[in-house]
Image (cartoon, rainbow, N blue to C red):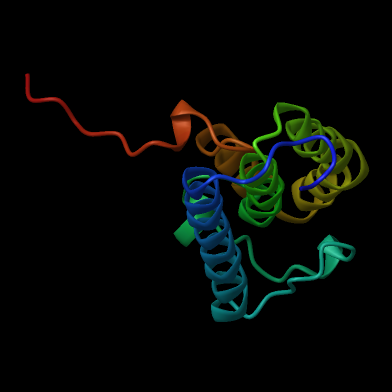
Length: 139
C-alpha cells in the first residue's frame, strides 16, 4: 500500500489506466502535430517556433502536453484512491502556469501577433467547456 492512500481497487486501477492511456495518447498526438508542422517541441525555446500549431489537439487546449502530464498525476491519485493525491496535480497546474506557460505565451504573442490573439480567443489554456465541439443549431 502507498502512503496517503488506500489499496488500489480493480476499479481505481482500471480508471487510472484509462486516464494514463488517454493522457499519453494526447501527448503523442501533440508531439506529432509539432513534428508535422516542422516546428520545435522544446518548451524552453518558444522563440524558435516556426509555426503556430492550432490543429489537432491544439484545437481543444493550447497546452495538450501539460494537460497530459496533469492527467498522469490525476491517474496516480485515482489509482491510490487518494483525494489528497490530487494536490500534486493542482500544484503542477499552478506551477506550470507560472513557471512555463505564462512566459511561453508572451513569446508566442511576440512571435505571432494577431494570429496568436485569435488563437487565444478561440482556444482555452487548459480544458473547459470551450474545448467541446460546438454544433450549429437548426433555427
